[in-house]
Length: 235
Ligand SMILES: O=C(O)CCC(=O)C(=O)O
Ligand SMILES: [Fe+2]
Image 1 (tube, rainbow, N blue to C red):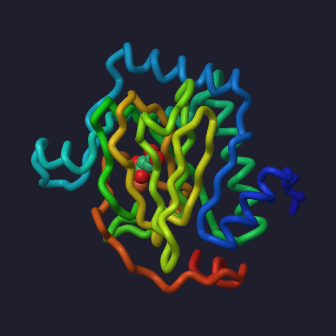
Image 2: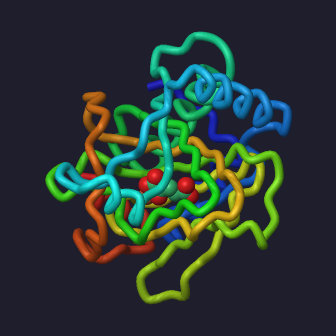
């Protein structure tokens, strides 16, 4: 098996994931790459490729907006050029590192752009579906040009038995966390908030349009801080 080069950045991410079930890096992309990626998002927005995000198969639109106010557009998994391709190449490197170091058995990543207009939020939830355990790790990359705390819009993580953690969507920030056990929410934003949200999955299907179960908390085994704990939760 060829050795996967694990960059020091990935090393730090892996260590944090093992220790606390979530990780953050502000250096995965250059500022110029973040800008190019943002331009790409804006182009897709102008083309009318975005649609309201969904939360439940039968939920009414008004109810959805109260829970989740973003609009989304899936990335092209077959992109060959531009930042969509570059990002998915980097994500592929991370996938190889994750599988090598933690044996998570991840087979692919899929993700979408998300735009939260001012006033939008995403209520507390867990990313793994009730009836589908394919999502292993959630990822978020923020494409905002700048961010100040007074804009709100922070991602609030609720690690079990610990205080909540607030992460502001600053330009180029990357956050990842275990999809099945880390409740989180997006606090109401006062500015337009741009991101690429995605999931490392252990299946090979690309079924878009399924929706996350709200407050699906407490499923799965208790999180262990040791590698063996991570290994076992991935099986
Ligand atoms: O944008 C974020 O910070 C998180 C979004 C999220 O939780 C989701 O789309 O499931
Ligand atoms: Fe989420």
